[in-house]
Length: 351
Image 1 (cartoon, helix red, strand yellow):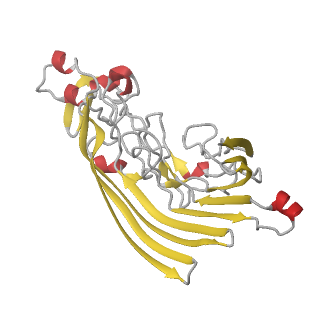
Image 2 (tube, rainbow, N blue to C red):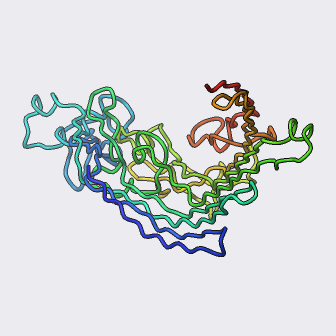
């Protein structure tokens, strides 16, 4: 694989304390690995005629079924009979029948990321500094996979004739985009504030030298891939996607009804769902952390540092994983939450 990176940044100083910048950043990936099925299963429509013959593209296929029985079913024998090599009558049956799934890791895929980052920063003045940035971006990719072994024989392009069918927004995970995740908007705000040097010796002893550092992070929902792993297309492939049959796929946004289950339907056998890869947005989330610290000087070259940190300071509920398996009993529900409040304390002696 090859990745090219590019960026352009403009900065401007306002007064003596503030700096603002606007940065365009991007990268382009070429020769992205993907698993191409070389001996895929084709869907043969209809049922067997009076002789048990089935027809594909106007030609009788080289296998028979019971008269009136479906020409394509979700069983091992049917999958084997409908593989590309098995349907090729120019290849002797004992040769074609010796091949099951044959996958190739090819390198024709691509991916790209483009983003605009706006930031503003206030230099430390009287013990106070502030920094904020906002990112709007888009990540899109072909299906990234490097699987070519029998254990994962049903991985790869859903449509063996069209790599681009699986192109979509980056979603986290092995079969997605190499771990990248498309989040369109991200906002970060952080700062530090140090207590002043008090004149009164007693107040100075108790209150001088403290520093508080809050961090706020807000993220829009990440791209989620809705799947149907029951093989509705009858082609022996994982990660098939359903049809979206309503204008909006979302419910009321609650934990139990984030997605509207009625907005999705399994595609007809032999067809691919119209829902794009990574087309659904998961729940947005946020984080509010704060750190409190102080150095206590013992001698000129020695001091004791106290530090307390709180993550999710308000101990708020924040949604995490959305069940995106369209045949799951909890499909469309948020099934996990991010961490509750976590606090940690540290005491360090430096000499």
